[in-house]
Image 1 (cartoon, one colour):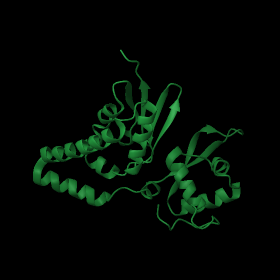
Image 2: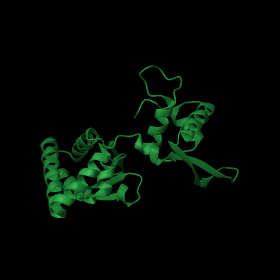
Image 3: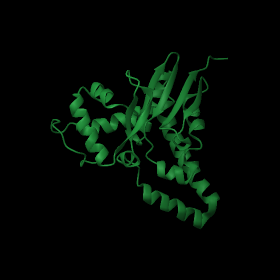
Image 4: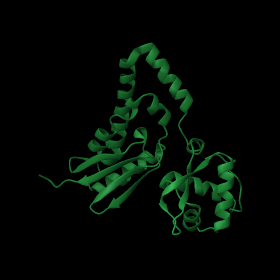
Amino acid sequence: MRADIPPDSAAPGSPSTAERILLRLKTRGPASASELARELAISAEAARQQIQKLAADGLISARQAAVATRAGRPRQDWELSAAGHARFPDTHAQLTVQLIGSIRQLFGEAGLDKLIGQREEQMRADYQQHCTRLKSLPRKLEKLAELRSAEGYMARVEKQGKEWLLIEDHCPICAAAQSCQGFCRSELQLFGEVLGEHAEINREEHLLADGRRCVYRIRPVEPG
């Protein structure tokens, strides 16, 4: 994120309270001021002050929560605006979209598909190189999340009973994917190949289908 977020009293070199609020809303979704204060271990007044600054800068916006307060009044939650999401890296978004348009114009959809196919093969080779030698499904998932995070996807793994969630809180190629959905067409197949035949994977949330993020559920499959 950029460094011109409203300052506060955070220690030098550490994320400011505003940065922590933005990251919390990015990774875990909308929250009320009281929730932010509690989770970030700051005072309610400090949370309100930072929220007011972020809202004034157009980085967050208010929305009515589905759950009412104890008094029965609608609760106000805060979420990232489009400008707030834009504070997280989208790899050369404008240039990428322009290049996609140029490739379409010069080589047609077939040429664009060939380019995307080459990218998929490179990703497959990289993921397989790092994950094939790992024996257990949890270790493969952790390594896959590590590789995806290095690419800017802010990926993490959560255990849910006997299953896992691979969560990607950010998409560094979102603009490109919106311009050409082929960029994420094969992720399910690619992840399935990397995790092996003893894992079943399904996409539960998709950024391009009005989801807040991309989430994949992984179930272990017994041999035979």
